Image 1 (cartoon, rainbow, N blue to C red):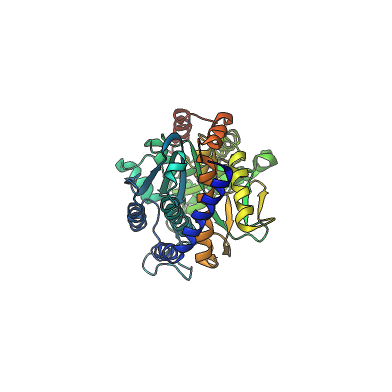
Image 2 (image 1 turned 90 degrees about the vertical axis):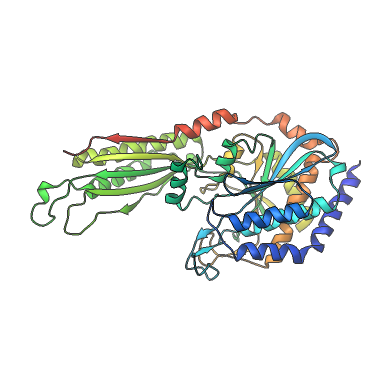
Length: 446
C-alpha cells in the first residue's frame, strides 16, 4: 500500500464526511441544545453510543459514569490511538443559548468536539479503513473536563462512585486507557491571533485548595475583643499569598487566584467560619508543588496571626499539558492540506489547564486548537461560527491524522512510541495524584 493509496483513501474519507454534513450537523446541534454538566452527560452519551453502534462499532458505555468507547479494529495488530471528544457543558445562565431550565451552555465548544468525533466515525467506518491499517482506533467520548460543579462531584467521591473529579483522570484510574498508546483531541478556538490550526507548546497544570478558617463568634459591635475573626485570618492569608508572587519564576507561569466563597454569617457577628478557595497553576509538576507549599504556608500564617484555626483541603486538579512534537507535525501537514498555506502554526505556552495534560504525562498526546468560534471562551458571547463547517473540518482533521498513524504497518505510530519517554507510568501517575489529595488541620481556636 503506497503513499498514493493513503492519499486517495484520505480523500475518500473526506468525501464521505462531506456527504454526511446534514447528519453530522444534526448531531452537533442536538448536543448543543442539550448541555449537561460533567458526570451528568447522559443524553450526549446515549446519542454518541447510538451513533457508534449504527456505524457497526462495538461500544462500551457507562465508563466513569457517562463515558462511551467505540472500537474500530484494523486487519493487523498494532498500536491503538484514542480519538477523544469531551461531552460536558458549563454553567452559563447569561448565554443566549443557555438551557432555560438548567442555565447550562456549550460555550466552550465541546458540542463541536463530539460532533466532529462522530463525523470521523462515519468517514473511517464507511470508507472501510480496517483492511488498510495495523492497530485500533478508539473513539472515546469523555465526561467532566470542565472543573465545575464541585459539590456534586465531591459528593460522588464520598459515595464511592468516582475517585477523581476529572473525567480523563477517572478513566485512567479505571483502566480504560490501559489499551491506548496515543491520544488526540481537537479543541475549538476563537483567537484572532491564532492560525486556523494551532498547537501550544504546553499548558499549565493545577491543584485545588479549599481553606476553612475557624474563629470565634462574638458581637461585632459590643465585644469584638471576645471573638476571633476568621475573615481577618483569610485576609492575611491572601496578603501572604500575594507576597509570595515575587518568588514565582516567570518561566514557571504560576497562577494563583484565590476567592472568598463564604465570608461570615452576619454583619453584626465576628466571622467564625470563612472559606477561601483557589487554584494553584504552574507549567511543571515541580513548580506546582513549590507554589502549593507556599500557598499552604501563607494560609497557615494568616490563621496563626489571628489565633484562628484552619483546615486546608488539597485536591488534585490537572497535570501540565505537553504536546507530542511528532503528533503535532503530522496534524500540521493535514492542516495545510485541508486549509491551505499558513493554516497551521505553533503558539506559546498557555496558562489555562486541561485534563488532556494528564494523558500527555503517560503517553504521546496532542491537544490542538481549530478556528471556528467568536467571543471569549466560557463567556456569554462565545459562539460557533458556521457550525456545520466547524463540525466537518474537525472530523476530517481527526480522521486523516488517525489514518497517517496506523496506515500500512503503522510505522508512523510505532516510530512515535519508540522515541517517546513518558513522564510517569500509570502507577506513578496515580501516586502523584494521590499525593495531592489530603486535608491538613492546624490549631483550632480556644
